[in-house]
Length: 230
Length: 230
DNA sequence: AGAGGCTTGTGACCGCATTCTCAAACTCTA
DNA sequence: TAGAGTTTGAGAATGCGGTCACAAGCCTCT
Image (cartoon, rainbow over all chains, first blue to last red; front, side, top):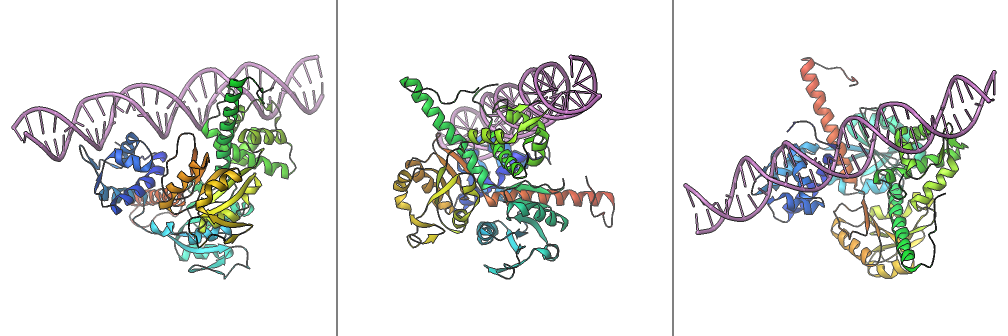
């Protein structure tokens, strides 16, 4: 097995495994089989084994995986053995919620600064931090060694926020704004879009409804199909 | 081309196209080529054409797509020609932010209720709504024809929230809690996990750092060039 | 010590998604 | 109306990720 070639899909599941493993240690467990981990993480066991095999051969045949050791290995691979400083750009509804979100610190992500372009907000306190001026972003990033930028601005401001983060040297951006933003190749970009998720649900909901009425219609001759494509 | 078989990956991109198209009408445009839409949505043009071809042949060769017509077709396919009522379960940090989020109503998603299991919160007003008792979930879902449940509880309460939503008849769930939840096959489930996204970024950030130090060590003994594009 | 029972790690296979490519179809201009 | 220039739609090729299946390896029990 090659040393450096973890598939994207696997990387996306490692945090899931990590969380399940952490819960298991809390419950006093010490080893777990791929089957057990698969159940906890909501995937199937072959996938778990294949994913973990990319990290190395850390399991014991006939026994399973040592939970503590596996947590260490996954954490190391994900770069969670160090702390990462984040800056939240845009402190509206969502920015506020993110700033107060407990889940970050739990895994070594520290919100090191909040910035907003609206000068009326500058100085306002949110939890332990005060909102700072967007114009000072570059200085803040450098001084506090921020490596992750979280964009929570309105859509129109998102690309600008990203550009400024990039030029300040940030190489990882998480975008919550409902807008497509582009960054240079050497910058990692991930996006979270609430509205898009709802629209995807809407699609399947509507399809379920369509299938249901189709089935009904087929059984009872009464009404005709609504939509025949021209 | 088959009538009813839109790939998941395509469904996930349709909302993206829809947003780009809406921006184009705002700018007064009337037609767009697959290339133009691809640029706006941040994908490539072949993908746009293939995606749109699943909906039908709505383009004109040599011209492109009629924006307004395309918006109508995508909206219809996504089930956005009707409004959907949502209930937010768990009104903590995130629940609050979601309740106030403007982006929902824009696409026909209406937050019809907020519920929380903490009775001290019950009655508290958030925007136009008052927080209601989690115990009343079933009644609320039925009375207000809620079809989408948004889970924003702490991790431990997430599965219970989902179970109650399901037994109340909700068939679409969006989970923000950092926990794996399971639902029956006929229920759609999507998840958004902030912490996982950060961990994925962390992985790539750390790998970049590792590659960088490797390259530095290989090339010269002293200092290295600041930014060399790979 | 040997047998039997588990569980891992991985090669092989399969299916979906993306990309490539180009004929078909349209517009515009002269 | 003919020819040049665009752009779609879809078949073919490619690649990635998921699943299957099983040999290899470890443990326990007798």
